[in-house]
Amino acid sequence: PAAAFTHGWWAGFSPAARYIVPLMPLFMVAIADALRHRAIRIAAVVLLMPQLVIDAVVWNHPRALWPSAAPVNAALELIGSTGRAYERLLPAAHAGESIGTALLVMAAVSAALIVLATYARLRGVQTSGSHGRIP
Image: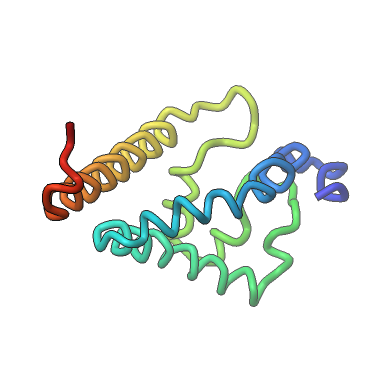
């Protein structure tokens, strides 16, 4: 990433690697608890399928991650029209570009996951008998 930054890489100094990766062990506790519910497992599998396709493309074409002068994601370009459509849903890396669609999609996905998690939690409480009643 440091070499890519000097050639116009617009993703900054990789806050994901700096701040999120060290927290992954803590996130895994919540993820493991959530995966006990069938709806969350199904949602996780559905969301992981596109990521597996992207990983397979990047594994076979690692230079697709290198920065280029073109304002497109080379890895998603290799996937074809599906990859280009997915790229349009992602927020822009350049400051000042419109990210309305991406924010709307992220808000919808977040809301759906919250509803699924709440439903799974309430269903688990209702089926657990008198020990798990909501006060």
